[in-house]
Length: 192
Image (cartoon, rainbow, N blue to C red; front, side, top):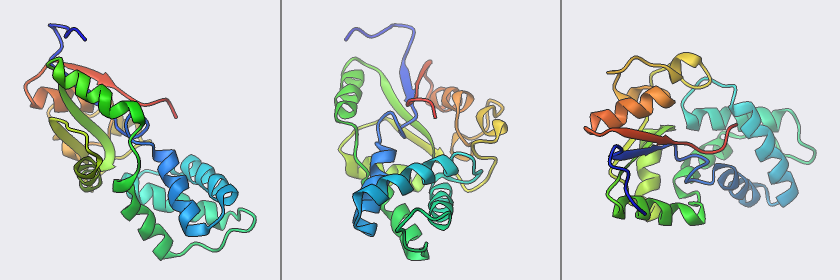
Protein backbone atom coordinates (compact mmCIF):
# COMPACT_ATOMS: atom_id res chain seq x y z
CA UNK A 1 0.00 0.00 0.00
CA UNK A 2 1.35 3.41 -0.93
CA UNK A 3 0.82 6.16 1.64
CA UNK A 4 -0.89 9.32 0.46
CA UNK A 5 1.47 12.15 1.37
CA UNK A 6 -1.34 14.53 2.39
CA UNK A 7 -2.87 12.09 4.93
CA UNK A 8 -1.04 11.30 8.17
CA UNK A 9 -3.73 9.52 10.14
CA UNK A 10 -6.89 7.51 9.64
CA UNK A 11 -9.68 7.90 12.17
CA UNK A 12 -12.03 4.92 12.38
CA UNK A 13 -15.41 4.41 14.09
CA UNK A 14 -14.86 0.85 15.34
CA UNK A 15 -18.46 -0.36 15.85
CA UNK A 16 -19.41 -1.85 12.50
CA UNK A 17 -16.03 -1.22 10.87
CA UNK A 18 -13.77 -3.19 13.25
CA UNK A 19 -16.04 -4.62 15.94
CA UNK A 20 -18.88 -6.96 14.97
CA UNK A 21 -21.38 -5.25 17.29
CA UNK A 22 -24.49 -7.02 15.98
CA UNK A 23 -22.70 -10.39 16.07
CA UNK A 24 -21.39 -9.70 19.57
CA UNK A 25 -24.87 -8.91 20.85
CA UNK A 26 -26.32 -12.03 19.21
CA UNK A 27 -23.52 -14.21 20.60
CA UNK A 28 -24.07 -12.84 24.11
CA UNK A 29 -27.83 -13.39 23.87
CA UNK A 30 -27.42 -16.95 22.48
CA UNK A 31 -25.38 -17.84 25.57
CA UNK A 32 -27.68 -15.96 27.98
CA UNK A 33 -31.02 -17.09 26.49
CA UNK A 34 -29.99 -20.49 25.12
CA UNK A 35 -31.92 -20.06 21.86
CA UNK A 36 -30.31 -18.93 18.57
CA UNK A 37 -33.53 -17.83 16.85
CA UNK A 38 -34.75 -15.91 19.90
CA UNK A 39 -31.30 -14.29 20.33
CA UNK A 40 -31.29 -13.12 16.72
CA UNK A 41 -34.76 -11.57 16.98
CA UNK A 42 -34.10 -9.86 20.31
CA UNK A 43 -30.70 -8.58 19.07
CA UNK A 44 -32.26 -7.11 15.93
CA UNK A 45 -35.00 -5.36 17.89
CA UNK A 46 -32.58 -4.15 20.61
CA UNK A 47 -30.14 -2.67 18.05
CA UNK A 48 -33.00 -0.90 16.27
CA UNK A 49 -34.35 0.58 19.52
CA UNK A 50 -30.88 1.53 20.82
CA UNK A 51 -30.23 3.72 17.76
CA UNK A 52 -32.91 6.17 18.92
CA UNK A 53 -31.70 6.51 22.53
CA UNK A 54 -29.48 9.41 23.57
CA UNK A 55 -27.00 7.90 26.04
CA UNK A 56 -23.53 6.34 26.09
CA UNK A 57 -23.30 3.14 24.02
CA UNK A 58 -23.44 0.66 26.92
CA UNK A 59 -26.48 2.36 28.41
CA UNK A 60 -28.17 2.54 24.98
CA UNK A 61 -27.61 -1.17 24.48
CA UNK A 62 -28.98 -2.01 27.95
CA UNK A 63 -32.07 0.15 27.37
CA UNK A 64 -32.55 -1.27 23.87
CA UNK A 65 -32.29 -4.80 25.24
CA UNK A 66 -34.71 -4.03 28.06
CA UNK A 67 -37.26 -2.55 25.63
CA UNK A 68 -36.85 -5.47 23.21
CA UNK A 69 -37.43 -7.97 26.02
CA UNK A 70 -40.40 -6.05 27.41
CA UNK A 71 -41.97 -5.69 23.96
CA UNK A 72 -42.21 -9.43 24.17
CA UNK A 73 -40.25 -11.48 21.72
CA UNK A 74 -42.13 -14.76 21.78
CA UNK A 75 -40.55 -17.11 24.31
CA UNK A 76 -38.28 -14.43 25.77
CA UNK A 77 -37.88 -14.32 29.52
CA UNK A 78 -38.30 -10.97 31.22
CA UNK A 79 -35.44 -8.49 31.32
CA UNK A 80 -33.16 -8.57 34.35
CA UNK A 81 -30.47 -6.15 35.53
CA UNK A 82 -28.08 -9.12 35.48
CA UNK A 83 -28.76 -9.64 31.77
CA UNK A 84 -28.09 -5.94 31.09
CA UNK A 85 -24.88 -5.84 33.14
CA UNK A 86 -23.70 -9.03 31.46
CA UNK A 87 -24.28 -7.41 28.08
CA UNK A 88 -22.12 -4.36 28.90
CA UNK A 89 -19.42 -6.58 30.40
CA UNK A 90 -19.40 -8.69 27.22
CA UNK A 91 -18.74 -5.77 24.83
CA UNK A 92 -14.93 -5.66 25.26
CA UNK A 93 -14.83 -9.33 24.19
CA UNK A 94 -16.84 -8.91 20.98
CA UNK A 95 -15.15 -10.16 17.82
CA UNK A 96 -13.05 -8.18 15.41
CA UNK A 97 -14.04 -8.57 11.75
CA UNK A 98 -11.46 -10.94 10.21
CA UNK A 99 -9.98 -8.39 7.80
CA UNK A 100 -9.90 -5.48 10.29
CA UNK A 101 -6.71 -6.39 12.14
CA UNK A 102 -4.93 -6.97 8.82
CA UNK A 103 -6.24 -3.68 7.42
CA UNK A 104 -5.09 -1.74 10.48
CA UNK A 105 -1.67 -3.41 10.28
CA UNK A 106 -1.37 -2.46 6.60
CA UNK A 107 -2.28 1.16 7.37
CA UNK A 108 0.30 1.36 10.17
CA UNK A 109 3.01 -0.37 8.10
CA UNK A 110 2.36 2.19 5.35
CA UNK A 111 3.05 5.03 7.77
CA UNK A 112 -0.45 6.06 8.79
CA UNK A 113 -1.40 6.61 12.41
CA UNK A 114 -4.64 4.81 13.26
CA UNK A 115 -7.01 6.51 15.70
CA UNK A 116 -10.27 4.96 16.94
CA UNK A 117 -13.06 7.48 17.57
CA UNK A 118 -16.34 6.14 18.89
CA UNK A 119 -19.58 6.70 20.72
CA UNK A 120 -18.57 3.66 22.81
CA UNK A 121 -17.63 4.57 26.35
CA UNK A 122 -13.89 5.11 26.47
CA UNK A 123 -13.34 2.41 29.14
CA UNK A 124 -15.15 -0.15 26.96
CA UNK A 125 -13.19 0.88 23.87
CA UNK A 126 -9.84 0.70 25.70
CA UNK A 127 -10.71 -2.72 27.16
CA UNK A 128 -11.71 -3.94 23.70
CA UNK A 129 -8.47 -2.73 22.08
CA UNK A 130 -6.43 -4.23 24.93
CA UNK A 131 -7.93 -7.68 24.43
CA UNK A 132 -8.39 -7.68 20.65
CA UNK A 133 -4.83 -7.95 19.41
CA UNK A 134 -5.17 -4.86 17.22
CA UNK A 135 -2.67 -2.05 17.59
CA UNK A 136 -3.72 1.60 17.23
CA UNK A 137 -2.09 4.94 17.99
CA UNK A 138 -4.92 6.57 19.96
CA UNK A 139 -8.41 5.85 21.29
CA UNK A 140 -11.15 8.43 21.90
CA UNK A 141 -14.44 7.20 23.32
CA UNK A 142 -17.53 8.91 24.67
CA UNK A 143 -17.52 10.33 28.15
CA UNK A 144 -20.42 10.37 30.53
CA UNK A 145 -21.58 13.84 29.43
CA UNK A 146 -23.94 14.48 26.51
CA UNK A 147 -25.18 15.14 23.99
CA UNK A 148 -25.01 11.65 22.55
CA UNK A 149 -26.06 10.10 19.27
CA UNK A 150 -28.67 10.38 17.72
CA UNK A 151 -28.82 14.05 18.83
CA UNK A 152 -27.39 16.00 15.85
CA UNK A 153 -25.39 18.20 18.27
CA UNK A 154 -23.37 15.09 19.14
CA UNK A 155 -22.21 14.89 15.53
CA UNK A 156 -21.32 18.56 15.04
CA UNK A 157 -19.39 19.71 18.07
CA UNK A 158 -17.20 22.79 17.79
CA UNK A 159 -13.56 22.11 17.01
CA UNK A 160 -11.55 22.16 20.21
CA UNK A 161 -14.11 20.21 22.24
CA UNK A 162 -12.20 17.40 23.97
CA UNK A 163 -12.76 14.31 21.83
CA UNK A 164 -13.28 12.11 24.88
CA UNK A 165 -16.37 14.14 25.75
CA UNK A 166 -18.14 14.39 22.41
CA UNK A 167 -20.62 11.89 21.10
CA UNK A 168 -19.22 10.92 17.71
CA UNK A 169 -19.19 11.94 14.10
CA UNK A 170 -17.05 13.59 11.49
CA UNK A 171 -16.17 16.77 13.40
CA UNK A 172 -15.06 14.65 16.32
CA UNK A 173 -12.88 12.51 14.08
CA UNK A 174 -11.17 15.63 12.72
CA UNK A 175 -10.73 17.06 16.22
CA UNK A 176 -9.16 13.89 17.64
CA UNK A 177 -6.87 13.43 14.67
CA UNK A 178 -5.77 17.05 14.83
CA UNK A 179 -5.21 16.64 18.57
CA UNK A 180 -2.60 14.05 17.58
CA UNK A 181 -1.09 16.64 15.24
CA UNK A 182 -2.13 14.93 12.02
CA UNK A 183 -4.06 15.61 8.83
CA UNK A 184 -6.96 13.21 8.76
CA UNK A 185 -9.09 10.73 6.89
CA UNK A 186 -12.23 9.28 8.51
CA UNK A 187 -13.53 5.73 8.04
CA UNK A 188 -16.81 4.44 9.41
CA UNK A 189 -18.85 1.28 9.43
CA UNK A 190 -21.95 0.71 7.34
CA UNK A 191 -24.83 3.18 7.81
CA UNK A 192 -27.47 2.38 10.37
